Length: 592
Image 1 (cartoon, rainbow, N blue to C red):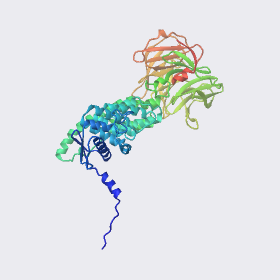
Image 2 (image 1 turned 90 degrees about the horizontal axis):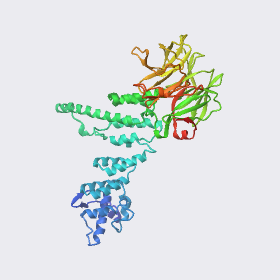
Image 3 (image 1 turned 90 degrees about the vertical axis):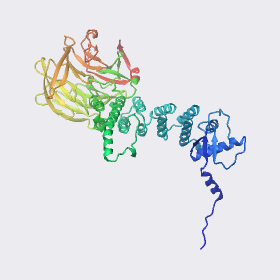
Image 4 (image 1 turned 120 degrees about the vertical axis):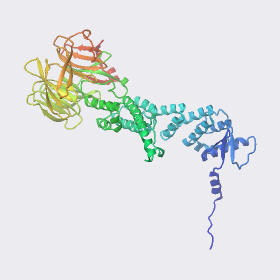
């Protein structure tokens, strides 16, 4: 039977033989196993540079380079080469290798080689070039190796790359491989200002914490960690449990610090509720407290009461906190800490602004026309009409998902949902015993409505639970509820009555409300329009003249009091913020 023969391509055969790498490469007598591309390039470099002084046999099995020669080879690699080759090296025929030498794999092999050689100048040059090729595709490999080698040069370039990359992008995989120090640094100066990005960022933080080791470095479980359930193994596991607890506590400590550095207040309430049930959050009291605090802020941020110091996402240097005043048919604003007033743009439909409230970080105004009330939102530096309501003299307060409009005439609370259709979502009727509402104030997860009775000596207090919309009779408040204002600090709620009495509002164990008198600031009857605490200063606005210098701070509540007034009748006074550029372009009024 005949034998089948294959045709043989001699040139292809020679090429295949050239792919076989049996050549041993030594540098200063130390053996290195380089990949095919590097080995061929080194071999060509060795042949050409050696042939300049002596003839070398084509049949090489081993080459031995000096450190100086290897340094010369490095400068033939395109990414290592500078504008002018400092060594003046020209290798004939080397261009065919240049295209493949610039890969990440080759740079990492060369980096590993120079580290084995322990020559500082080579290490420095090599690490500089490795840092320069960092990209999204190779970041994980280079960053991981740089941390393993503790290379300050490469890590410095990696951090600069992170700053540049995260200016306009987000890659969860990059954050998951970062060390604690680098993740903390990145989160603290996080450039994203968009609320929708914060959910992804926070989930990444928890995912990172699940896989970090006790040194703050991402860890991957290996098969060597698995212990068979023998008696000896059980003893080992018992020891490991204590070690694991310590490890978890360390992780949770790092988790809490990163959460504090993050812009957690900008995350969605759904994301925060999800993370509050995370196993790590359940085990770490501090992390649980941070997430819960952010959840409460999301529920309460729409009220006039309190803005925590980190309430602003983004660069706080670009914004200024202001106190906003309903000033007849205009809106005026006090730029806090600078003590000067500006005007918001005028709306021709504003007749008399009776109420201002902040909902979802936007300013809303209720303007009375005599027969009806119009609700406007301040958006993109102009007023936009939202809704008209019959009658007038409403009180408005934002809480949770709605703006609650208290209507004493129809004995109801109207729930306005600005971002939904219909805007007037629902209506809640007053309880039978409730009448003559004077003031509505934020308290915890409720709205307290103070109603006048026959005498100014006391007022009835009704509580509307949010979001359940259930009514509770909370008894009485000593003194008048007229012109009363409320405010809060980070942990406590307060009321300021027109006779100057400051009281803390507390919920007792039986769920009833009590008012604890703290101090009386003045002895006259005052027409108060609003109050809030910002950076430990209590800002008060009134229609009653009084010298601010007569007022002193209240221990445990505020270190000082800023009192502002105008004798012309004004509406309420709430806290808000606007970009610095809007302040510069606004109409300036007066100030210190």
